[in-house]
Amino acid sequence: MPVSSVRFRFRQAFRVPAKAAYEWCTDYQPSDARFFEQKWRREVRRLAKDAILLTETTWPGGRTCVIQRLVRLSPQDLAWTNTHISGPFRHSQYWYRIVPDAPRRSHLEFTGMRLIRTPRSLSPAQKTRLTDQERRGDSALWHRIARALEREIGSRTYSEP
View 1 (cartoon, rainbow, N blue to C red):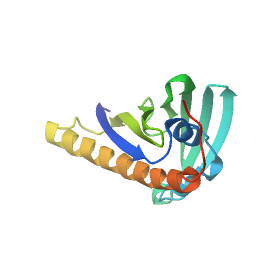
View 2 (view 1 turned 45 degrees about the vertical axis):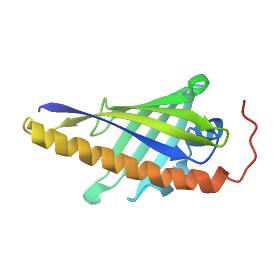
View 3 (view 1 turned 135 degrees about the vertical axis):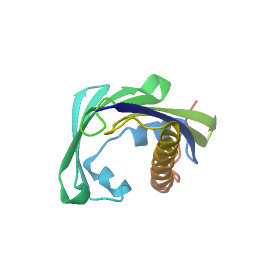
View 4 (view 1 turned 120 degrees about the horizontal axis):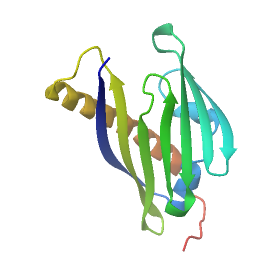
């Protein structure tokens, strides 16, 4: 089965300090399911200080789909990676970096590289449509996450350098 690589980027602004945004975004919990529109369950296993194994279960079309992701943290860079190690998008990778913009403002720089298995090779037009669809979907998810982040930590006082 042919594999197509779909690469996309976007930015998401946060009205919170960069370090606080990073800590909130990388504090993986089973309750994170609240950000997703479909029924979803997450198990979190800390492998090391900088490595987390996420096992996520969804039920698309009534079928069970289990995805494992390896998350690697880089707190000194306010960055992390997320690599699918099993599931329909196995070997896909996502890069995240929080960038400070002002004392109480920051933004996420997101780069996704999704590997998609298809029955036939995609035409350039199909690949462009798929790339746009993936970017829009992940960008919309991060817009919802940003609002939750701002509600939950926006009113706290932080001392950042």
